[in-house]
Amino acid sequence: MKSRQAAVIFVFITVVLDMLALGLIAPVLPKLVLSFLNNDMKRAANWNGIFLTVFAAMQFFFSPVIGVLSDRIGRR
Image (cartoon, rainbow, N blue to C red; front, side, top):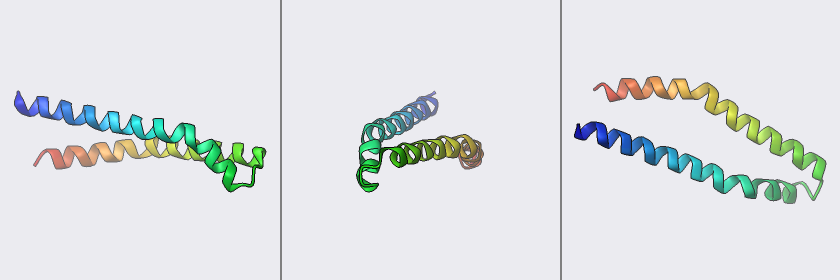
């Protein structure tokens, strides 16, 4: 039972850190991209969309891969 509780705590901390990272970058990214593109709002909006789409796509495609690796390492 103790190892199960430790695993739940580990997963909880991992999810909190992931959401914290997204919560910190989401408000800053638009202004940061806008400053890099010399205040060109149209290009900045396009790049923000690209960044967020790539982030979501990487999570979608690599979550199963990470899950398989986690299962294999966790079985040892």
